[in-house]
Length: 426
Image (tube, rainbow, N blue to C red; front, side, top):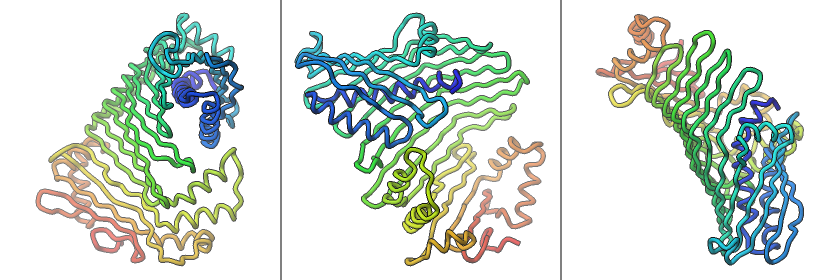
């Protein structure tokens, strides 16, 4: 793993470590700590993103120590190894401070060469992880990452201090935090990351498909290269939600961008909302188990999982793809769904992919005020003068329909073939 990549992975690794320690510390007895640790290890190990190995708790009723090693991306050529050395102080007034079952003070260590760089970059300051375990098992961890500067091979990365909290209660984990930003300066590239804030909530499930929701915002991102090409993004907001029933699982994501500048062209108020619905829960669990640890799946296994997945009639819904607001909005929505009858031979379909087209139902609807569409096309087209001409061509060909002051189009794909505004595409 290259140095810049490792540096970029630190924040995510710290969040992972914080959540793990919060969950581990969030019990009142050594027995409960080990039981929770086993659940945490299983969840992380099953994810494939990290492995967790913990040594035994060493201490007594007044407190003790425990060491946990987290390996991020263990299957990669150069995984990132983090060691968490925790000191547990037992209650009811641990360390003579707040009332609670225990406090856990954690020291975070990276591999020696990376740790040496961080010690220098942080100016002697240390990463802080402090956990308060309340009676009943709920725990709250606060974490702080010092600001610093790191220069390597002509590129300087300077970042502001970051911090947040991780709260574990039963099978639920809540985390929130803030990172004021960072700057990257090099001979060929300059980047400026604005303030990042996050708020996430997750609930574990026995099959590792727990429900969750999150919100991440980025104030701005500016990139400029040696050739003068600029990229600027303002007001990025990403929302995610996953929820399931006993048999299916849905996943939603939405993106919002207040302003985007690419190559000197500006686009405002971009929104994208997607929902993946009716994913077969059993098939997802089998896929997760089959691919764990980088296993190679047999064709028979793949066919079985695909057949089970498609049998639930999943659908990808485009709830919104839009630019602009109000009268200036240009908007698309649509879906790609399955309409296969019961008893469909999915093994035969997987062997003959062309049969899948007859089982799909695709439709897309788009509309906008004519003036708004001209304005958008004037921005993205090679020449602004092309915008009215493109709309006129679309109307003459039947791809676009005029409805008063609005331009509308409907595209569908079914057993009848590709249709545009109710007519077969010629």
